Structures are given as C-alpha cells and as structure tokens.
Amino acid sequence: MPHSANQGSIQSCPAPILYLLSRYPLWSETFIRQDMRLLRTELPESCFMALFAGDCPMQPDWPQVQILCNKTRGQSFAKVSRNKLRRLIPGALQARLVLFKYRRTLRELSRQARLQQVRHIHAEFADLAAFLGMHAARRLGLGFSFGVHAADVYANQYSLSALVQGAKF
Image (cartoon, rainbow, N blue to C red):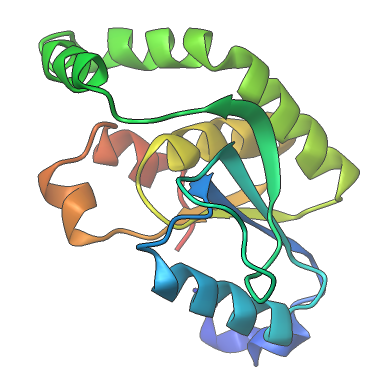
C-alpha cells in the first residue's frame, strides 16, 4: 500500500480505499486474499469490489467482495483471438472502444465509489479494473493507484503509460 513518509502509519489514513479487482474469487489468487485480509485489518473501512465474478464459488473464510456486474467474463478462444486483433488498433481508439463497451460497469463503479465515500481507488493489476478505476477516479476527483506485476508489463492489454499518467505514487 503506497503512502508517503509524512503520512505516518497506514492506520492514520482516515479515508476509505476501494480495492478493485477485475474478477473475484479466483482459485489461483491466494496472495490477493492475503492482501485483502491485511488491508481489512489495517483499514477496516476499506471496501473491496470486483467488476465480474470469478471462476469459483466463494469460500466461507475468504474476504467478501461486492461484484459489480453479474455477467461472467471468461477467456474463450474467440476472446483470445479478438484480443490479438485488438492490438492492431491504435491505443486511443482501443481506449474509447473499451470505455464504450464497459460504460455501464464504469457508471456503476463510479456510483458505488460515491456511495461508499471512498477517497482512493486501488486496482491490484494493470488490467480492465485499473483502466475503469482510473476513469472513475478522474470523474470523481479521487486518488488512484494500481499494482504492476510481470504479466502487466510483458502482456498488458491496456496502455501502461495511460494508466501511469492517472496514478498517484
């Protein structure tokens, strides 16, 4: 969790954080659940949201996450092919197409952030959640950050430079 030296400990942060994921729960993401437990301990007022449901049922001991969109979002062969073709489209046009496609999800994310009175949106990966989280944060005048992992650098679907421009470190 990024914070500057003059803020003191993370517990002194009075504003809630919206911790945003693209999909949850996922069997493979055990470290995400650990991060959420730690954040819940340190900042109990934080809220956890995912854009879409994950690939497995929620287990009783896992952190609870609000799912914004009931549609599932899988990786079919057709989607993988579309993703490869999409890389041929200029980045600015891709961004507009993604914003159009997920406009309802972005509206709901913005609405929930307002209702929860969050002051900062943090996306765990540089993926669709980061892209929509950045735009929701801009619309609402909130802080925004995201985590970058190896897959985000080497196989990213969204422009890291665009995400970094909107992030606060």
